[in-house]
Image 1 (cartoon, one colour):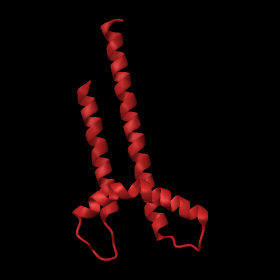
Image 2 (cartoon, one colour):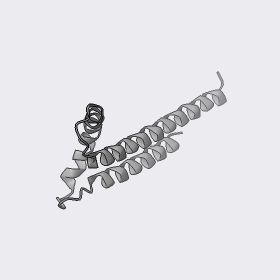
Image 3 (tube, helix red, strand yellow):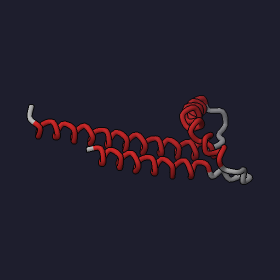
Image 4 (tube, one colour):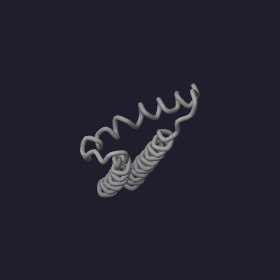
Length: 103
């Protein structure tokens, strides 16, 4: 295998990793948004909705808890999801920048 073929494989692998990171972080951001929206819903007992809310809680709460420790309590409004989504965007851009400079 020649050098040019190796570079093509390297660039293809880096492109695949960048795509995976972008898709993963976008999906996680959407899951956080769905978690926020469903936390506002208070429907009568619904086993399906309770399972969905529990799944979203288990997936999102550990990450959001990191930002709740950083921000002071502001009463009824929780700004930690906004900070968490902003951090996801920063992490995404940083990882893509690192991967682009790696090649």
